[in-house]
Length: 434
Image (cartoon, rainbow, N blue to C red; front, top):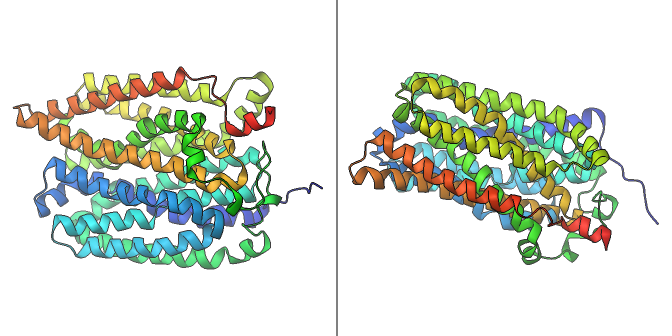
């Protein structure tokens, strides 16, 4: 006998989004902050480009290594317990980062920050998938990214203004306190919601497009997810395009402005502010547009993934112009890049809806793992390539342009591969037809 699903409404629904949003705000700020403090870190700790890339990528390594266990924990224990416990490790990492004087010390601290905030988005997606109707998933995902991008905004001009006054160590001490507060808010403010709408009762929360196992313990493991052709198709695109964007946004956008475009630290912080503001506005627009397009696409047969392909094609062209036009006035290309790259959110939401409910935590976390493997690889890889080209006598600006051009060729390949595989269907759709 089927039962009518019950979803959150009103103030409770809003509170859940805001509570998860607080933690994701801090997560995104920590992801983006190195783009502004990179010169101060390099000067204080005597870092090379490769060192800086490896240090920033430590966040993605810690984040990525946690994704597979997080998927299991989210499906078995729910987002409230999982995320609030991990945030304590993030607070510890921020404290270690603030007090360390060596590359190894700050690397461990940043890796622990990555571990601590590794569930911030996936926990929200898990809660959204069970507590909100399927047609709101794209909109809710966009809301989270709006909040996250606001966190990235806080890591631009505000951090640049604070940096010469209090220093990066004091900033990270404050981050440690903020992460502890976020853990307490999440653990305490979601208890009543979890008790009234238990996360483990997955049979009452239909996937929207396929029957699901009655419990997370009965669901297939990660092997079935990684072996799925649809998942692999989406994972390659996500790792290269979405993961690579995270690497640029969280580190190399800042050095690009200073090294390639010749901007000062102050000018760079203002451009990064505008860049993240454009991203925030684009996510807001996407949150309004996405549910309307999903309904339109269902009527007309125009799939969401074609929008993803068009948006990423424009993204590749814009990045090509960024490489070819190394002039200060070309900073506006980064604004276009910020707007079009938001289509990757549609792909991530598509993966969430593609698998049965009892597998959502695992599927989302597996996909997120690929994003952070891509982010780590691109972030460290660009640093290695810049140092390599410089060692052959290239100027720093030319070396950075060539490194990004190499990454651009990888993007073209991933997009070409994605567009060749239109016939591969999502698992839930295949189950429906079967």
